[in-house]
Length: 507
Image 1 (cartoon, rainbow, N blue to C red):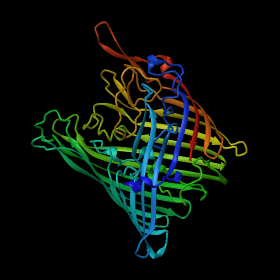
Image 2: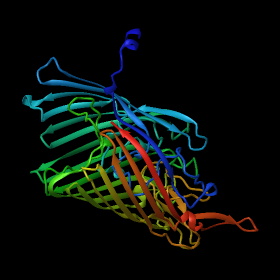
Image 3: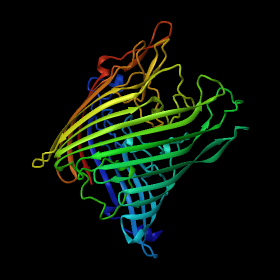
Image 4: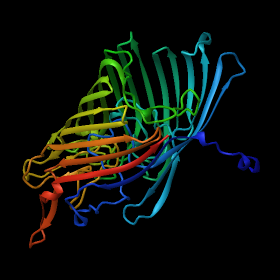
C-alpha cells in the first residue's frame, strides 16, 4: 500500500474534464412561491426539453473522469489486452441549502482481451468485461431512446456489471453480451425476501455498405423483476416474474463520407491512450463542401404486466419509440431537423408500467409523445464565435379519463425517475403533471438562442436565452369543502423565460 501511495498521479489520467461556473435562472417571471429562486450560481440543468438528446448529462455541470488505462501485447502472437479503471467525479452544490458535496461513481471500468485475426488491427475478436457497471452497454442508438441499461431492472440497482463478446471486421461488427444485477426476490409462496440475480442478454450486428450507408440491428431479453403490486397477496400472480424483450434497428445515409455518423459518447469506452485523447474537447463541425446525413431508428419492446382491467390476469404490453435525425453541414454551418416519437408505454417501460406493474388500461385515453426540433449554428473561425438557435414543438404523451376530464401529461424518458409533480412548478422540468381540469393536453413550445465564444483551446464563454410555453402547467386549489381541483397555473409560470451565463473549461 505504501508503494501505491507513493506513485504520482499524472495530469493526463484525468480526461474529459468539465469545469463550469454558471449564473442561471430557469424563469425570470416566477419566484420562490413557484419554486423558482432568483438568478444564482447554484442550480444547474437549465435546458429546453429537446436538448441533451445524445448525452446523459447537462453541459452546465462540473465533472471529470479519472481513467487509469493500460494496453499490452499478449504473450501469444496477435493477442492484446486493454484495461481501464474509470471513475466519474462530480462536485455539486445542493440547490436547497448551497451545501457542497462530491459524487463519485464508476464511469465504465473494463478489461478487454482481443485477438487480431491475421495480425490486422481492423479484424478483431474481443471479450470485454465491464467490471462494475455495464450501463454504457445498451441497445438502441440515439441515447435518449436507448434501453437495456441498469435502470431497466425493477429493483433499480446501483450497478449492473456484464460481459460482451464482439467480432469486428472493418466496419462490420457482431456482438453478444450479458449483464446481471442483484435485487430482492420474494418467494411466491412465502413472500420472504431474498437476494437474487437478474439477467439480461444483448445481441447485435451492423456495418457499412460502401461509404454512404450503414445498417444496424440489435435485440435483448431481460429478467426485469417481479409483479409485487397485486391487490391480493394470495393471487397466483403475486411475485410472478416480469420478462422484457425487444429489438432495435437503425439505417443511416450520408452524401459525404467525411460527415461522421451521430454516435453518443455515452455508449463508448474511455481509452486514456495517445491515439484517443484529444488536445481539446471543444470542437465544431466543419466540412469541405456540403454533406447531408439522415439517420432513422426504431425500438420495439414488450413485457408482461398485470392487466388493469382484469383481476388475476396479465397482458403482454408493447412499447415503441423511434426518430428521424437529419443533419446538413456546409463549411462551418450546421442545421439539424429531427422528429422523435415515443408512445406512453415506452416512456414508462422502466417503471415498469403506468402504475408500477400494471399495463396501461384500455379504458384510458392515451396519446404518444411526438416532437419536432430544429437547431442551427455557424462557427466564425477568425473571431472564434458560434451563434446558435433552436426550437422545439412537442405534443406530450398523456393519459386521462373521459368521464371526469382528468388528464396527466408525461415528458420524462424511459428512466424510472418519473414522479408526480405536486403543487406548481416553474418551467417544464417535471416528468408528470396533471393538466387543468377539463382541459385537453396542450402542445409545448420551446426555443433557445445562444452565443459561444472560444476563449482558448480549453475554455469558452456561453450566453443563452431560453423560453418555454407550457399551458399544461397547473396548480392544485381547494374549495370551502376541502375538495381539491387542478386549475391553470399563472401566466408567469406557464411562460418560462430563463437564461444561462457560463464560463466552461473542457479538456
